Length: 351
Image 1 (tube, rainbow, N blue to C red):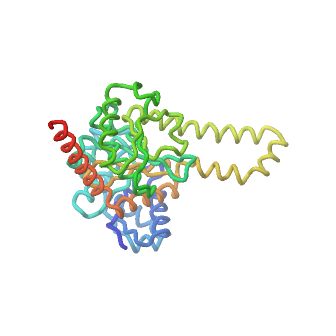
Image 2: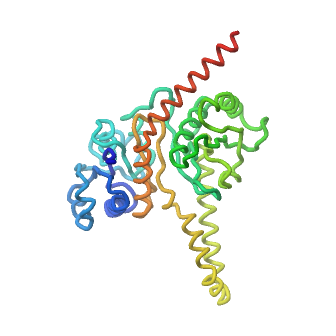
């Protein structure tokens, strides 16, 4: 099966062209059905492609004269959407020249450009930034929103839950993902009015939405493997994500310091190295790279700006998987089921 082309913003990220091309080439070696539209400085892309003939044969280059900087304000970036590599990659999705776009550039600019060019799908008020996080279970966990919307009402949270569940069904294979709202406690009386309202709506409609919903989850339980989708507003979600990432780095650095503290510790490191390598692999953000803007009329994936080639390849793989399983159509179908469920409840109440 040959998928629609994936537009890659080759200029985004901390190291730009080299890592983005290496990552795309690695993804292409893993999956030869991938085709690419590489957007950016044509000469630099051609030079980078010299070492990757397999990618070169599966790619087309779209020259872009400009780049969105990492510290640029979204409003400034929007004015140059027609000339920047990021803007042209997103526009390729809008015009149908590509099925999806991947960028490691400025997150705020990417969201602003994506919303303006692709618009939100019918039934979705706001798109949400979603990512996969590691857990102690067999599958990664979907979490959203991670920063796109700092304030959300109950309607937004319900829509996020629907989108997150659709995404989870693709990446976990579960027919009914376990969805929970992030809260300060699991008791039904805890949380804001918006959380209470969202929980009530999801509980009433869960059977029609192919999800298992059972209220709230606290932040210290999100990585236990007991939840497939964690839903929250972008403010809380971004804080929770940074706390998880910071804790992972803290544990890794603490282990490294401990193993280097004495000769006996160094010997202990050699003995336990297989276990520490497994831990390192599990906590490496490159192995879970690829945040998705859910709720748009098109697929846009954000790669970590500091991602290496493996990380970029994983972001491309996430993008391809969403295309292969028609994430946009799945969300639309779930929204239609929610509408039908609401109408049935309204009619029953009227009786």
